[in-house]
Image (cartoon, rainbow, N blue to C red; front, top):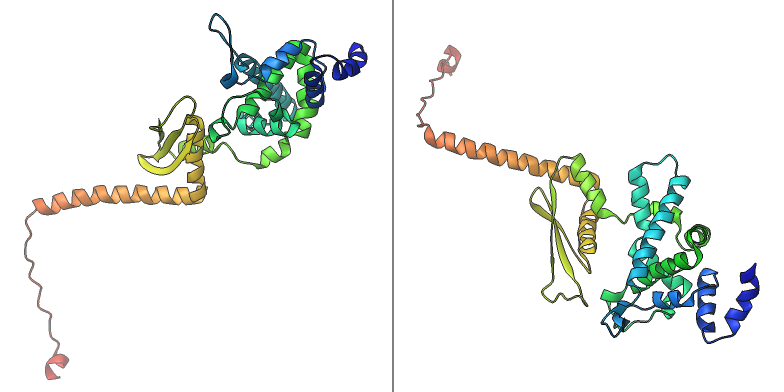
Length: 291
């Protein structure tokens, strides 16, 4: 009730009217503590350095917001899908709270226009808006409480910007799917992941190879180990369907078994002396003699 009368005043008067208006337009809330929301918009590249050397940015709020979003989405999925397994719920939640998903939400609500950053517009900084969204959720949680954040995410964000039905049809966790396939078909899988020679904290970049039974079957690159491994697994999924992979692995198993047999056969043949066997003479019938 109090916010109803306060909203037009905060939106139109005072030195922070731009912040109040922006937060209200994006999230439908009039802040009690506007400083939390200002902090949520400061990327670490634009950190404010205090006299004691402490860096002030949105990373702590991002950490808190990430936990709040995961908690609300877990509760939401648990209620919406009462008959689904833990694996299904975990995989769907990972899609909902992924960097790509939250980055898209941030851009669609216009949050990207307010983020304060000194980073150049390159691929290594493409998720800063999703991080800022998490920080804003952390700020709203501290300012308005869990119940408000719960309603905001479920009734607005999940409905208008994160389409669960679309996520059900999309495949993004290629790593889990490939690991599951290997376990099901009794194959070993490992990842060889390392950072690029030009790696730095400002420009992180990793390369990853997927090895199944010691054989390299996929390759990928990304700005984190997780992203590089996902892309490597995606390259495998693009090359083979489940049936194709099964056939390929069966062929490799048979080839390996034949090689072992061949090696044993060669050793046996070389160790046993070869005897010349005389062919028996064919009998000639009377009719054949007369002919």
